[in-house]
Image 1 (cartoon, rainbow over the protein chains, first blue to last red):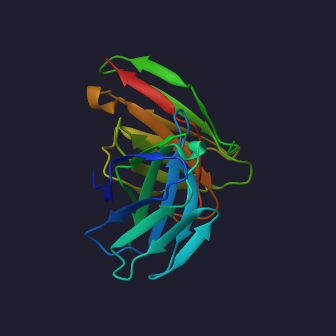
Image 2: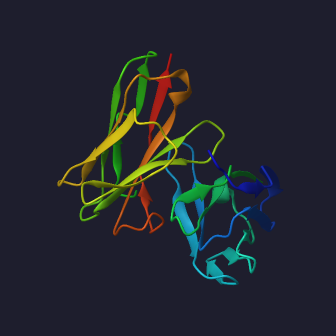
Image 3: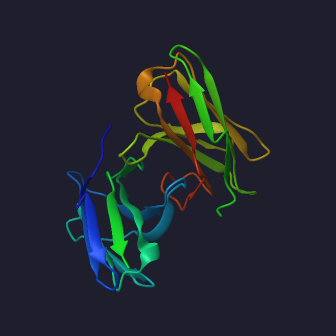
Amino acid sequence: GQQLNQSPQSMFIQEGEDVSMNCTSSSIFNTWLWYKQDPGEGPVLLIALYKAGELTSNGRLTAQFGITRKDSFLNISASIPSDVGIYFCAGAGNNRKLIWGLGTSLAVNP
Amino acid sequence: ETGVTQSPTHLIKTRGQQVTLRCSSQSGHNTVSWYQQALGQGPQFIFQYYREEENGRGNFPPRFSGLQFPNYSSELNVNALELDDSALYLCASGLGDTFYNEQFFGPGTRLTVL
């Protein structure tokens, strides 16, 4: 099935560092969502974006809806050990079907 | 804790068998979506039910079918299991009929087909 290009695939960082990941699509989307999935759990919604150019924060997390409507990025500032997990982007276009990225696996060294 | 539960947690079946996976949505949620997540992949949308009727479907064959009940529970049925059906199956509940409205995911059922 179709999946979005998400990068990087994995990251290993030191506690306190900032993290940046992005997601690109060949199609125009009306919605971008960012999720985090912990082992043995389902994804949890972090941030939802509904408008091109929109910049939204949720605590230490900031996400932006790209102006071209084909990309989005997620930043995490001052990472902490509990940020460990897999981060997924997901987007939806006019057909309203949610397409997911392959995920970015984040490891944080205390 | 999302209030969405799934059963069983793990399941092992053999090729050709049939399986039923169950999901209990948050109380009051009238939409449930089912996803297949293969190892190392993102979730793939299977279908969504809104007020007990199928409201949209991804690229999955008819042997994947579902039901939604008035008591906020739902089922995913898969017939004639194939090896590639081995995956984590996630359900997500929400309000309204938009595919990407805020969804609350359950922990998933890990299906292994031998």
